[in-house]
Length: 163
Image (cartoon, rainbow, N blue to C red; front, side, top):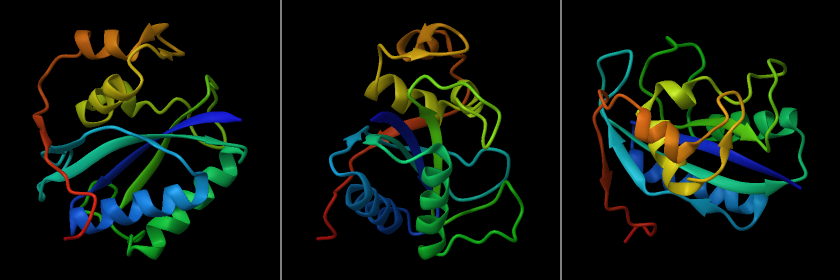
């Protein structure tokens, strides 16, 4: 079994799509580790704020199968693929890590955005603070402590039920 870490983001009907992503990931993987939900300003474009979090799961799926599953979940929830890379989205699921694998194909692992975006690094530091980031050899807690806190984000109270 591999431990995978997945980033989840949405800035269109955020609560609805975050809840849907968690439900689909639970159905696919069973028990999940779930970070707090953070709100952050859009990065790379002018747009509505995002909700972001990181989820941990154990899987026997391959990297390729995980990526295919995440794209299918995004598509079921209205993800548009014919828009600019930096734009609003209903749902964004990214495989951040797959155990301690380091590779460029079929996707880059660990994802470069881990060390570049507070909305990825802070939830990782919360969820798996002592896990080592393979290229740097530092823990996610250390990476967050050293991170230049220029991107603004904050924890939001999040109700996992729709009531």
